[in-house]
Length: 280
Image (tube, rainbow, N blue to C red; front, side, top):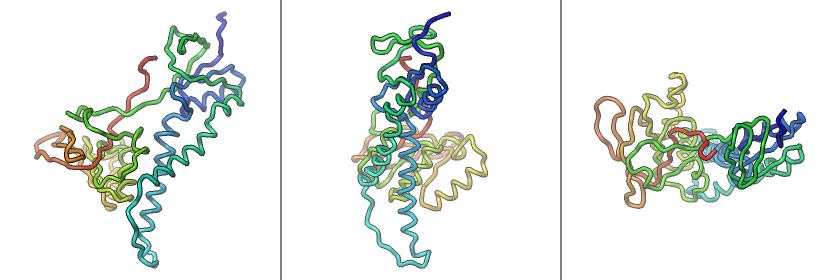
């Protein structure tokens, strides 16, 4: 029988990897968790669930405040939103939760935590920055990252993704969102409620393309009522920097139609994900 350093090795310290590490260690498996960044928590804590829901909550409170008159309350004249202060709160929530995703906590549960860039040497062993570590079984929980759609010039302009949007400090007057999936819709509604003019560009015939059409229509009616502009069956053709902002040329995804040019202060790319498996 082969002699391994660990019963269970886990690559990726996000939601899935942390859950597997806690469970494996508490069930008695000798467990090691490896994360390439300098903090645990992964996408969910730093770029996904936690910051997005915090921002959505803030935007929801702001939108509700603007509707005070509907509830028989005095109408409130509100100043513009300071996005920097909003994002400070988002980071504060992340920092609070980070304590629960600390290496010390998972070590106390019985798992070892290491940081670095693992590379598989064979089916049971990895090289970790010069150290060789073996395990009987490995779980790859490396998650995903945003991918760029094939739009001319997009890679050459300053664009946002879910990994950069929560570090922004200035609320854009106009925001283009490439992609009408869950991430695009959440951020579109939040930024619209905070005061941006938001324009969604979606390649498919409906937002939330894989979902039921009737459900997608309910959400579309809701966010368009709030002010979000949605272009479905629309292909982003070219992006370029213009007048300290973004100029996006779009056209019909299928069939005939006119070419349009959309001007915005910023563009958020939410048009799909790719697995984080490079270098393994």
